[in-house]
Length: 544
Image 1 (cartoon, rainbow, N blue to C red):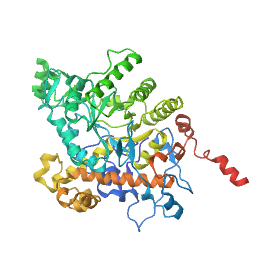
Image 2 (image 1 turned 90 degrees about the vertical axis):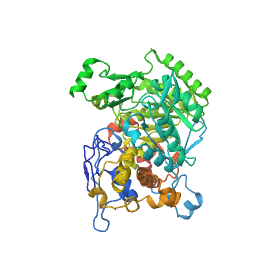
Image 3 (image 1 turned 180 degrees about the vertical axis):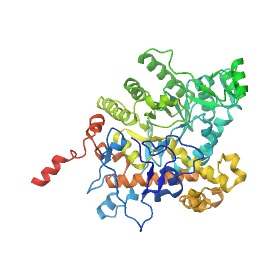
Image 4 (image 1 turned 45 degrees about the vertical axis):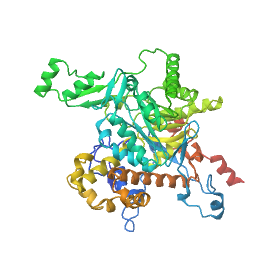
């Protein structure tokens, strides 16, 4: 379900067509504003409230929604009681929303602690991930949430040296991991994906030798954006030839004379690099099971203490297989990405028409996880993704998948602050613009109306400076400051919703904290219709 393009109450607007998350369907790195995430990356918690306080009153136009989406779930609030709050505070009546804990513990042995129940989507070989990585990694490390290094990072790195399937040097991968570890204080995690190409290139062996005790290795089955392997697009024919020599499919083939002629004439300007499809040599779930368990066993023998799996918006059989294998192999996390999320590059028609929509997939996740639990089997910690970007959506997804869902995976919602911060830094410090991939020569009015320096633009600047000190603050990319500010906003919004539901720890969030706003949603999610919830209890009060 699409959102309105303009939100007069918050003073936000979308440059393009907004989708369910409130983000534009096409999110540009040079955008001058000002969607809710974009503005919240500067103003922080202020964007939780209507603008122009003291001059306005505001009322919601949120009528009963039509269709099945996260917008068709409503968050329940309770009048009395607390769950998970400090008993002394609760008894004294001094409990505040800021007393809500957002710490999430994940892993088979609960050895990973996150300050927020959030993680990034996979930030892999697309150039946008590489250009803004410093902001993404530093922002996540400072915020105490996991960041995911996506697939093919080594394979596309011109400076990487690979001989006979063994990596001799991988500077881009090293940069990605070291950037996060520099500011990590023990919270969060850095997760590195492993797809078919990465396995052939020896990525697991390289990382195990250098970072096995510091990195979670993640096997990659797919994502919500597409049902084929990873893709990027390049415009340089020499780079396209390099990628072909690395073993990738490059389309059109840059080695063909007719392609070279078309490129020279200007008729062909871009080349798409594709990864191989996984499991094409396997014909049934039994073979996949044997192959997968063997992979996990091998990764653990290499020294990895933490192993996870990322799967996409496939159908029910693949979903059940992912959950069962994550259970049997005692994985530390299973990320399930529904259709409707974002991408760095996917065939657009495929994005529009492939895959199970997020709320339907997430509903089946809970059903299947509950079947495992009822059978006495281990249920892996789950992360859900697919076009989620607001505090309300985070709460709803955690509730829909409770008690098994521990994290919400966010793609563009995590990346927008990095873009914005780099643009602001480049405008204020032209000497850094090329290095940080800033796109602005000067601050647009949408930013200059807020401030003219990092100290006056970012609401989170001074809190982060208090944490790091003035000297270290000088080394922090503005994109990381923007991410920290936006995550603080999302966290505060989530705390408020949890406090209203009287739930003071994440593990206390339950499916009873949400209700379906229409019968369609009730049927598919098994979440009761809003006026049926506690209806019998209400009648007993009237007649008791």
